[in-house]
Image 1 (cartoon, rainbow, N blue to C red):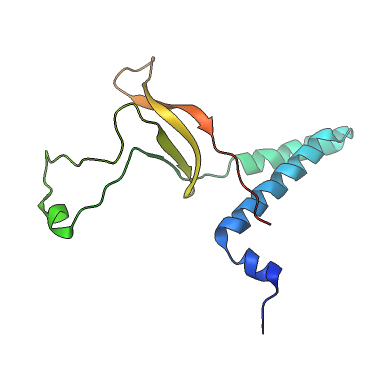
Image 2: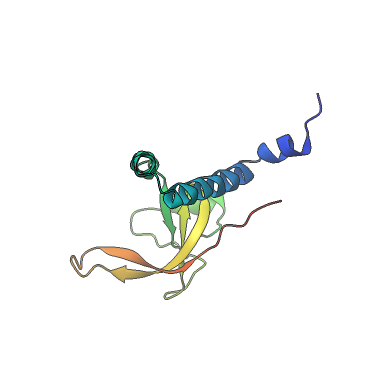
Length: 128
């Protein structure tokens, strides 16, 4: 059985995620505008459920390619050169999708730890 254009598009995970995120944003914005107090309380509870869903967040400092022989030769103390230089922005990736860029910063409350200061939010693109 041949798939329709819509069914074929929905089979692609990135497009599914984009559409789901945009639909969710639209629903949440519509709910916030409704004047019904009881509805607002219920929508707040629904938003809290959604907001507690865990996601995988990665900060990508850089990458490199190397032959298997070099990879097998790595040992404690080895240095791997990445494709980024000091001071270049790092990518913030959520569930495999780049959503922002940032710069590495030392935490004021704990100088032995570092974090990321966001410098750019990458806008979601909608596919037609």
